[in-house]
Image (cartoon, rainbow, N blue to C red; front, side, top):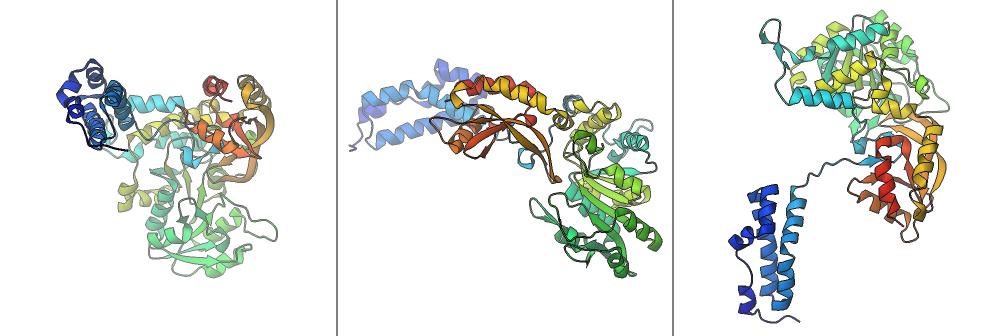
Length: 467
């Protein structure tokens, strides 16, 4: 039961000035700043004052609370000053995890970002002419060199903030007011409700569907072409498969039709890699170079998926078409900043040097099953109280890339005597560096293919104290 507040108890509450002069609070001011500590202290004092006013505290209990007040203020200011975006360890077994930031950047890219962003740069300044320039020149020569090595000449690349923006911009600049022919089997929806029909509407182009969900022939495209046709669109089924009674024209057939009728072919690859993924254990996933070699007029793809760079939407193709895209007013609204260009150029340099292990995504894909098994066994030894078992598993690519494809490897399965699998997974997410896992068959699985080997020590220390 509560009683009426005692005025003597109220008088024990310190004033704000008294509190700020204490040694503990003064130290917090030096670390977090006066205003941050002041706000936290006011909040904690108000909470104490309310409890005293309710009659719930006497002089003895208040003294205990006052002794703990500096710690309460410290916890308050620490929590209120913390950033919500934080580093996590991805042990989920999904390489390109959209919810976890997709592909991690290389150290070279991070160093390049720091170099460019801690001072000024020539983002839009022509150093030769000493006057204003254009930002889209950055990364152009690196893209050109890389494509020439792949046997592709006379292409240009524009950079926007993601692939959805790249598709929207390309359709708007090249087909606004006209028709775009696309197969019904390619009217995809990607995560976040990115739907091809909706994007088409926003672009001002008219969607002309052909064929059926499972079967579309080249004749369907040809019969749909009319005086209003601006583009033939191929959309890569990046996050699903259609199997069974199916038919789809080859890319070469579509390109031949486009050339014969004088209509550009655009392909939305979605993920879009710059290496042959078959050599990384992922056969059948088309790359950007495959499309350009075949003669696609313009290709859109992501920078932060299979390419392993920063978030970006890349538009590569015939210079005249890319120039038209860059001159559209929407390009300015969708352009990227110096951080993106810095990271993108650093990533492209790793490709040009063929230093694929510098790119975290490609390095993880190249890890052998034997390497993963050895890491799991070493980590299992550090978690004896969680009944660790090393189990075979399959790591998926994720991010809407390579549907139905996976990489064989090993994971560590954990079971607790005191928690069920969901509770254990939750506890791992509450670590100072959260660990994201997956639950299968009542066990928590840590797939080490998606974990940086440098984090193995942290995992071992964290798991050793659990049971």
